[in-house]
Image 1 (cartoon, rainbow, N blue to C red):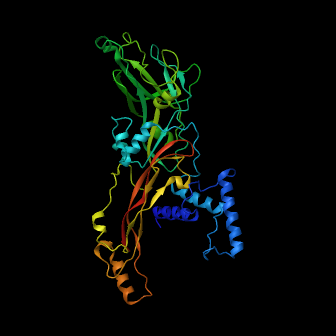
Image 2: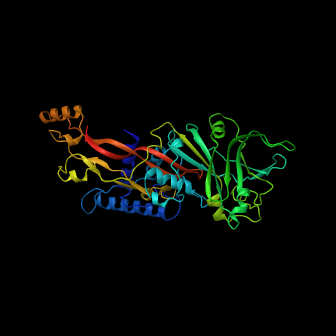
Image 3: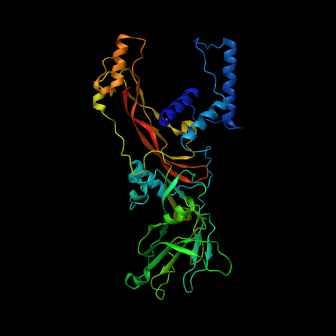
Length: 430
């Protein structure tokens, strides 16, 4: 059974066992209303079973309320399919960067009109070898470190990458910095002093007192403060050394150097590399959350297709042909999976649910062309027509597609990932 089919089976089982209308988590809380409600239902069912010898008023057996251990097993199976060791419990401080939301919208083909950064281009080169995108904020251990004489001080960032699974190979990484347009100056007189160079370094060894900082230049860019935008810098060599190469992670260093030091007046203040502002004061919590530096990694876990395979907006397939088909025959049926039904809407950012579909129906003799049958299914159906002990061919998915999910993992890191074989695109007799 494919992982996609297993997922649908488990979700359906959970919904059947929970009565199909339960909106709570699969795992009842140890204390509180959810646990009490579950216990109350169990007691009612036990009393009904004792009074009617296992029969309800209609004479049919009532399904016992699933045990806590059974529900825990169901949820553990689902989490394992998603590559998670435990259910994420996002903190109130967890934030989803707008870049990750935009990337999800571009990847999924949904709500592209809601892009926060209208100039954002889909990173086809980075996603061509990746099925997972992870984002990291630095640990706020901002530290001014000594630089060369007569040069602006550098800021060092440390990004904790320990949450990246060992079996996931990072193919590229970028550091994103926001720079704010400076307005209110005479354009002619300020043009020359508006140029700055942003340098990104890898810190090669721990800083010791009395020693210069050992760094290696990773990327550099000449910018002008006449526009507000995000700048992306390639830090792949450093991140790959830290993860695949096993080299120690001493962080990254950033400096903003004016092209004409004698003319400059703003000292690189338009580049948001620190919560503290050069002219005094600090950015507000909301502004800093939106504009703080962001490390983004592109990786592949060895399963399924890359993110480069972008989804188009879904439309009904062959809707005009369905009316002419026998409704009892093998075909695709709607099945919407709502993540709030299993209590996962607190850590799955998008989508809120998805149309998974399922296959059901007869495979009658003779098999018609639209039933998408194999030669073996045709032979099996032929034999079944003369020998009833041989079962008919089965209605099963013949084409499956992936979905993209944006979620918070166990470490409050935001992840965009492709999951294979999650949507039924076609059914047939096999």
